[in-house]
Length: 184
Image (spheres, rainbow, N blue to C red):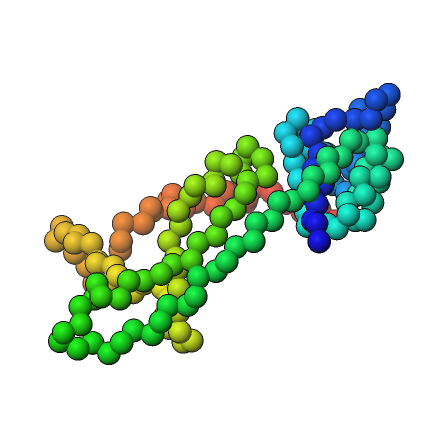
């Protein structure tokens, strides 16, 4: 069964106004203006991957009705034969050496779909295993050392002593109101 991917590189159907196509794709993909601007940046962007022929044709026709030229490309899937699992390690004996049993590692080859992915085709990643159930995956945390601070220049005042708070302004004498009278 062949699989296909749908990509878009910012090309519009001849005669279609660019603003109208952008508005149509924004409605079609329910995307904001920033994502639509990214679609029309000129770079080839994969919209959907892993479609069968009917699904790919449906996407292409829908995008064409919206005014956009979709790129339909068949995915090249390379069959990869996985290496058999490593044999259980024999019990160590004084005569057996660690180099006597070579390890076999399986590797998969990926065919890049564009120039961007081609940059990652020769990356060699380590083969990580799976930890047993209940294993602690985080490294042990190093205890932080308390900083050495010299506090010898400070002293404590007795309880209730004045700690140098700002003094309030002296209270002024009340104004003389003896000359004022109330009339009925």
